[in-house]
Length: 135
Image (tube, rainbow, N blue to C red; front, side):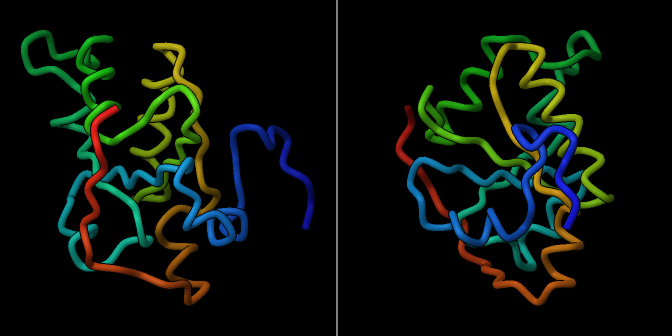
């Protein structure tokens, strides 16, 4: 397999599979339609809806920094947590979430191939919705 141009941002599904149980890795599925998450997601992943979690209807803009910090806190993310985003629609909205987080100086990664690649590889799915202690 060829090396990624920016391996600090794009991670392979193999890396995600190897780090599923690492408490300092937080997997976040970002979807337009969160029903996909409910039918099965990567074990340990939480769900974010790009429209309701990452945007504000008040200004029709991205959520403000305070809103993003609250979202991260609810996800149990602290400064030592590695955030890995993935999602439906070929990672379209996971990439949007990555952009929003990076806009506010939050380091995150994107799983190459998203939800589709994970499923196509026959990898484990879960319907359990984990909860994490707020950070």
